[in-house]
Amino acid sequence: MPSPSRPSDRVLHNRQVRIEVHRAALDALTLGMAQGLFHLGNAIIEEASAAAPRDPEKAEARGVPMMADTGSVQVWALGKRTFGTWAKRPKGGKVLPDQAVLFVGFDSPLAHLVELGTVKMAARPFLMPALASAIANAGPYIKAGMSRYAASAPTRTAKGIEIKARIAAARAAKDGAG
Image 1 (cartoon, helix red, strand yellow):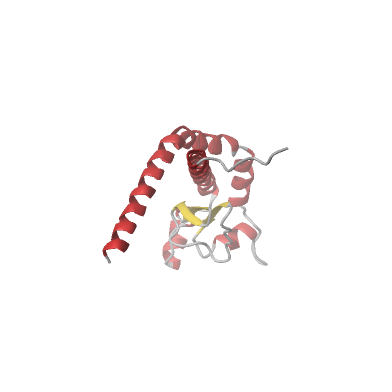
Image 2: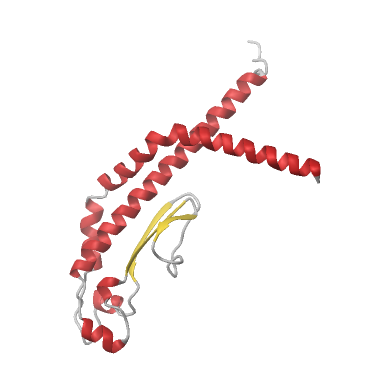
């Protein structure tokens, strides 16, 4: 059986374009999943804030905001922060470059004490029950985000390829001029 000949330049170019199209579509779907996770995180914070202790007098006396008002969400996808209300990644949070990670929490310095309890105070969990109920219904959030971006994936791909070509041409012109 004869070995196949080398494909033509046109075939190789079409294969490369298809690979870039698939990569860009995957990026669009990853971005859609990240947006779905962000909406899921907001739902978790909303439910947890409703159950969190509200005591404005104690908060004012301690000089901290009310615990129910300090909920934050952050989503990292492919190693980059994509959505969020926190300024930086939570301490100890691990983000791998091939994963999407949702961080949900409360910035209050007393939140963990109320959630888990202390020696002198029984636990009054508000975040974990909200998290447990939201995880069971996570599918619609992620599906909505992914379907929103999946519809735009081919358009985003074409624009991305066009932008990459312009950037490469500008770099080549700059390198040639310099």
